[in-house]
Length: 182
Length: 161
Image (cartoon, rainbow over all chains, first blue to last red; front, side, top):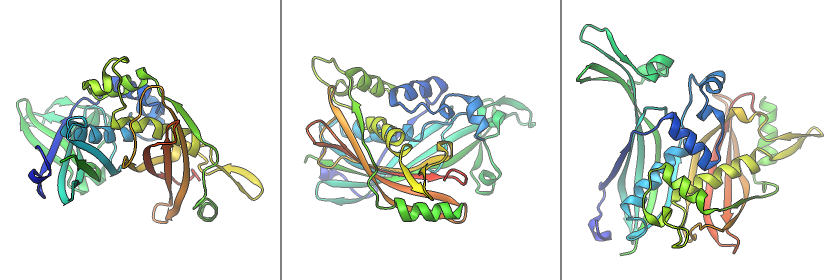
């Protein structure tokens, strides 16, 4: 994408990240100064009813800003003006985070996006007879709630080892604005 | 509990947060932050001699400083006694965030950021008795140039206010 004339409503910018793990959250805590132990210490997180550590809410925000920095070639083609997000769903270690931005409006050199960050949380893999082949953190620690089931967020799909059960939900909806140089 | 919420809605809404926070920006802090996100562009992680700027996600760094230094230390007087606007930070949930960089300058190593803020709105969700605050946070560098305007929405769960 070179300039404003090549954007149109519905144009999608997308990326995904599958590197949320305990080491990364420790590194992020140190780098960001957000040292709340609910992000790095399972025992503390369990004591406040979280069943295990959660990613920092703002960590995911950084994946949105990175999406646009990459898209704008680090300031060569334009600049990020604003992001505006709601933090709705907790992100866990092992989650796949999919960040998708869709153009909803163009005004002058500014492009307005709807942004959606979805998380895929793996629960377990069972063979065709229902025997457990592999259990992930979400299965062991009980991250899946009745509400998730009621809302139809729990899904299955075939994988080489059997049937994978996972939760797919919108963790962070929002908007963004970029301004192009030409 | 509802009395506390009503008190806070009446007395905190529209108030400038007392005090300010300062953040000194070091080269290593910016590089380490960018590396957490796997950022490899030299604009953000290049050599100190060539000069770098903060990636946009670095706004998380000074936003957290604002939360810890300004908001958690924000006290008011209720019935003659000093109390925090959040009685238990463990009940605090960061529920929304806006970063606006319009007409802002980059953050660079050596910068001394100055963070101030105000509470723009307070409301109670009576369904779950969660009290919400909306804070405007201004972040300027040592030359009084804005580097980012932040809006934080935070919910405080029952028992935390």
